[in-house]
Length: 40
Image (tube, rainbow, N blue to C red; front, side, top):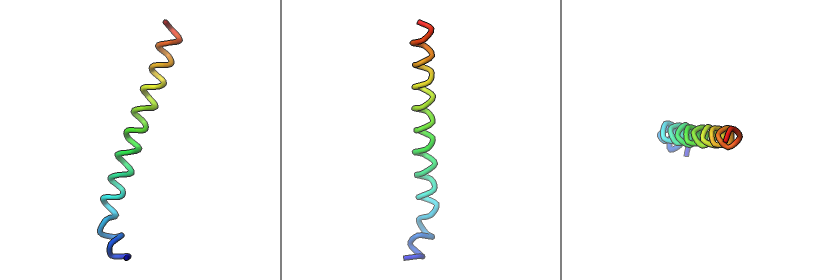
């Protein structure tokens, strides 16, 4: 079990980073959209 976790640690970290990255992009998009709506 622990060996399995160690082996897949990089994959898990990569997945977390990727989902966090997409989350940030979506947040930025929402903020930009809100600002745009506010000015228009």
